[in-house]
Length: 221
Ligand SMILES: C[S@@+](CC[C@H](N)C(=O)[O-])C[C@H]1O[C@@H](n2cnc3c(N)ncnc32)[C@H](O)[C@@H]1O
Image (cartoon, rainbow, N blue to C red; front, side, top):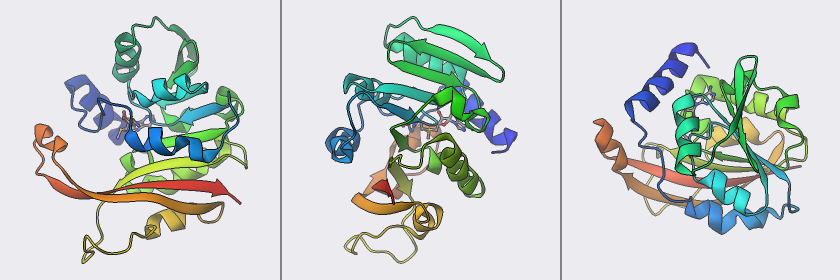
């Protein structure tokens, strides 16, 4: 990802513009996570984690949780809001913030190395792939592949623009981009799809927008 994009994210956190942030645990995470059938105690990697409450929910399920987030404002706010005092360790371009079962590497996802993460049992991606510009997504998927074992499933939540001409009542389909990015390594199961009028971005000066919320379970072959 180019550094101008990184600077835009840093600035939105400094300005408090975070329409993507959810005040509650993601309901699809809570409903579908157990369907991955993970052994208890495995480590879940949450790339581009923001200050998501989903980190806390995953830890409450007995997982070790490791996130990565560019903005120190987001990481600081996350621990403050949980009333936790994390340790901080500088590791080259990254700073590791840690408390209990939750570790967050603050810095660029693309600077993470496999040794930072250890063995990952599953990836939880909510609006990480889709936060990146389309041109950076193949690089993101490739870097994720390098960071995780071959047998690691991905729980992928996306917000996608409906394709032109698509109607509300059509049969939900895996988007061509998701097929292109993941089908070489994963069986792709579209577990949930819904169309929603997104109004939360209005606070950032954007008009309401129709989006498709989708949950894909990516299961390694
Ligand atoms: C759309 S938000 C999603 C955050 C979180 N997954 C959630 O559900 O609330 C994307 C997040 O990725 C972070 N981000 C963007 N580019 C990044 C990068 N290259 N490395 C690490 N974090 C990044 C942004 O600061 C932002 O917090």
